[in-house]
Image (spheres, rainbow, N blue to C red):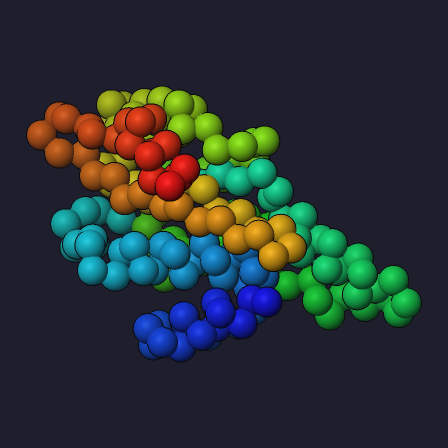
Length: 171
């Protein structure tokens, strides 16, 4: 079912060999962030330490964990245990884009726009970073969900709100 992720990767000619080592969750998050940043973000505008990543999901690496367990049910083998943790996804995004700012991955029952808004705005107001990729990336079975936002601090006004996130996440 995840062939569409490889098709998207090839279509946009992203050229990142570690992509093939990633599990489906990492591929989904990495691809979504690449497409988000591709045309809309000037990396040169910021010091790498000023750019952060804050993601959340409900299943952590459960999708890969289930696949691994079924793969070793007959014959023990670590063969399918590849890049499976959400923090690895954030690490790959950071490596690819040279981001060195605050990074976090939260696991919660459902998308909590209020928590995300408060957490990220707190980091902005305390000058922890000046730009952030944030949102929800989740995979379980055939259910793929990715909604990412690029938020930049500008003129002391932050238009990143719970209502804006919920509008896009729930549409």
